[in-house]
Image 1: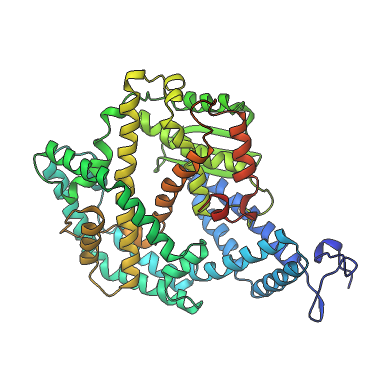
Image 2: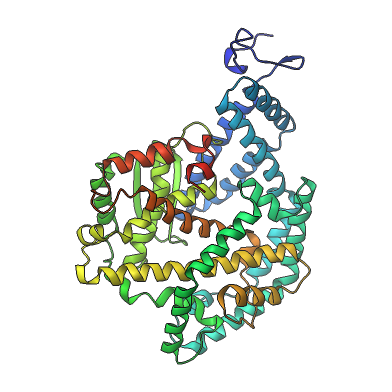
Length: 493
């Protein structure tokens, strides 16, 4: 039949051929799909970079590339190839190929849920319903309006949108669960967590421990803000708490100083930013920042929102750099061996942890020594507030998926009381949480686990930190192995 050597699994017992059942097990199907997915993902990232810079034509091309990506995963023979390849690779101890085949099977299964035509139509219906409301300024008012009555009015408007879209959202969650059940899962919660390598009890355990550990800090924040407001904190004050309550203590970070701080970290690591294939630009993008893996190892780009405050600039630059430096050293030419979203978020959040290092704050950020303690404490308070809101949102999504026929306003009120100690009577749930179910939990894991991993990397107060060994350790332990090592093992979870 004229097979090339790279089309078959090699093994010492069969003259270069691995036998399975009645014939040669070909690995070309898995490897070919992996390469095609990789090239399409790179293409997609470049198009997203163009789109975020205002290229209208890129949007239509993005749709086409995503369709091509999904078409590969829905090829009828691919699952069979992956299953046969995994079994033969296990027999002959080809661990990397076995891992690829396992990951490909997982991608095929989850893609069949996420890209189901009925599900995509249900998501489009929610977005269309949302777009019929004028929400301009609502989020900004909730986060920044000093007048509580303005914030209250903004949340009431959001609650009206929640009520008007609830039935459409309910239809979406029912489709999520039904499509997950078609693949043998109890519901979408189990499907999503299984895809990411998590058990539901592990999610609950991490959330509960984080909630109990940080509850005194959360209560103190509620009391402090309540005193400043001359009344108990209400639901319309929560985003204002997050955005404003720590602002004064974080004003020591100078706008435009983020790159100097990053260069200071890298200098300690014996690395120069200019030597890495990373470009950093300021831009008027809708998000705080974004990283684009145009060509891993060769061309990685960061866009940072020009309107960020000094602290936000430092924070989001370091987070996006965490993504970018991963793409400098991760496996290339393989989409399957690039870490999943959850793992990448945890690794990216390692870099903002440097903002709490006393020596770096003085030397690289130029913050006076007498302000260091207040600056670090303000960051910890901000992280706590963010974590509690993210945990509330995550648990609302989980509850809504488990009880899709319940009143979403009542579910929202219940989880707000349990997780925040705030009685949110309006029930203005977040549509993002239902359009992207359980994505917010990844940011809880990222913040909690990155802090733990960062602490494990620190050699102690009497050693130079960071050092050239720090970068070497990051590359060899986290970046270069990519998805050949399960994220739980790699990150000590």
